[in-house]
Image (cartoon, rainbow, N blue to C red):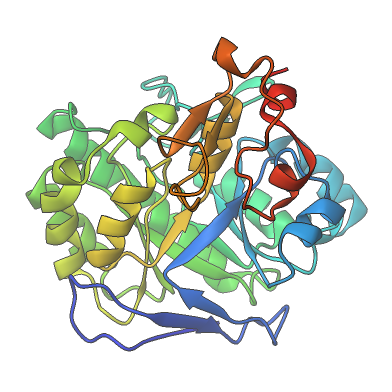
Length: 340
């Protein structure tokens, strides 16, 4: 896999390209890039056939361990990989640890040598070796090294320091197994930058990872995932993002997961972030809302950029979300139906 970018500066908007994927050699992705959010390997609310109707262009999928860990034994027993097991082999995948759409419970660390993963069956604790066993079975195109990202803006200096130290230890163990694994010869590893909102801790984390053989970096530890992330403004994270990005090698990928709102995403693109996920549309959908910021508001009746179908006013409204939109929803469903 190869990442190229037109920018030699650190903290600035940039355009790049991801190419030379070993599993699908003809795949090419321009950055900034939005990963398609999935649950258990499928796009929520869409069958695979409908997803292909929505977009025929190549896509990269965001796959979380939370929703897929239960498949581990079956994938290992059938001697296949994750992409084939869920019948999504034509898509490139990036395996993450936590689901960005759901709040990750804080604490619950039973051991300094493991990380709790919250699945539908409850908590599952993984050591770096156990995590890498899962990765070897899944064989993702890219994956995130195991890390301690259980920090946020309220975390103490002591907690942040421990998160950085544990993440370094986890990374070292993941890298050893990654380097010696025949199953992962076509998979790329992403290092994780921890440190919360503390610049010194971020610097220590980056200095450790800077010369490691990885395709890029995930900027982690700013939040505990879930819907609340959409309320985080650019001003709250700008200073720490600028500090972090300025220290990262400009030739490497920069990934920032989370349910960021569109305006914050645009600002983060301006700061040089390359890859995001699309958990925000999923969260909006689960909250019975629709986004209309692409509508021509001078020609439709939508006053704002978000419609909440929980409101009673839509019980008898048989108009589409936008009368000038050609998407599947607007062409086939009314506001009353969506309210129902």
